[in-house]
Length: 92
Image (cartoon, rainbow, N blue to C red; front, top):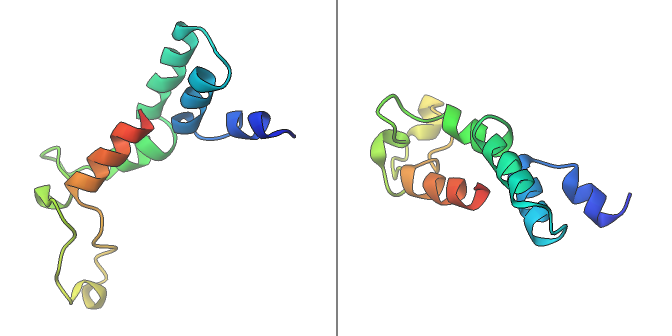
């Protein structure tokens, strides 16, 4: 498998950018692949963690500073709104 095949055999968040930047694919194909990021792969997983109000971690911009998050087993406190939105933007 060559590098291009390996990149194309990955998450939609990578694939649409490879199609656009390395394969010179038609705009329609790139747009179709990019649209898949909302329902498949990394971006879809982040969207599934979204709070009911449309934010992450209650709208926090930075990670929780609480020292007891480990004791309460509430999960990783680094998922907050700002970095999540930045990732979603990068994913397309």
